[in-house]
Length: 338
Image 1 (cartoon, rainbow, N blue to C red):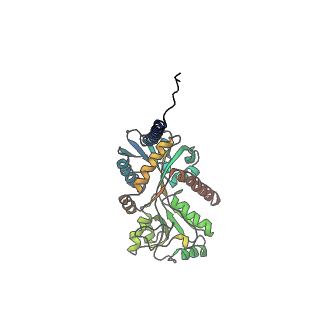
Image 2 (image 1 turned 90 degrees about the vertical axis):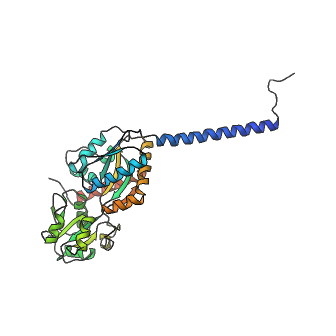
Image 3 (image 1 turned 60 degrees about the vertical axis):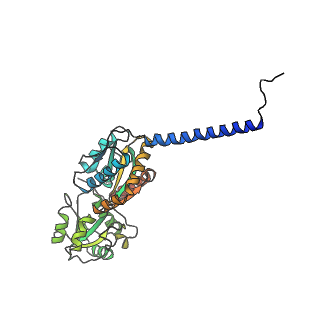
């Protein structure tokens, strides 16, 4: 009697087993490739918009356009920069936060956005909740400059001079609630010095006024101070962060006098909350590749910026930490915008 389940010869069984193994491996590989393609195709081919909360022609705008150019090449699609200036970046931030969470409307945020959300009464935007962090981009080092008659030549002498004459000296920044302003307030908080703040409407007049002696100290972008310092028209006293910037290698960091001191505006890329993880990861990978290119590094340095890449996973807790630092400083130094 013939069985319906005839035994399979050993050689045939082995061949079938190998075929099944190869088939399962091919299926697994297809699944992996499919997942990779899904990540790569997470963004559609419509243009990406990068909103900037500051006017065209400024430092933040310049870095946004540098990034957009690199992303356009990396993603092989159009990337457009849009300037929506006002309210220390909150207008642009609000627009992005209410945009579709599809990765096609992004915000080039700056540290000032975190500060503005803490200082400006009546506004409801919480950057830590409204956005999905995509990537850390750049830092823009700050420099403390002084009139040539100021009685200090380095960070330690600066701290000593300020503490020796409470209320005697003043310092200029590009406005209330800027990182420049809060950075110097952090210096005051750590030293107990009393120095009068003189807010300007922008940075353009600070350097000339420091040079002429209208104000003894100023906090400016490093690039704004380097040329005049090298020409001997003012004195570069300290970098507010320990990063080394081309042209300012000989300017000591403020951390020489205040260990651990590190204040610099930084630029980050943000997407609306709810943006799918695959899209965030695709954008982060593209940013990482752009920032690693020598031409990007050179162009950033020429604008006084330093690439400072962070993954989305690293950026989320770092933004929370930075926001907490600003909140504590605003409280302890009793900083308010009237």
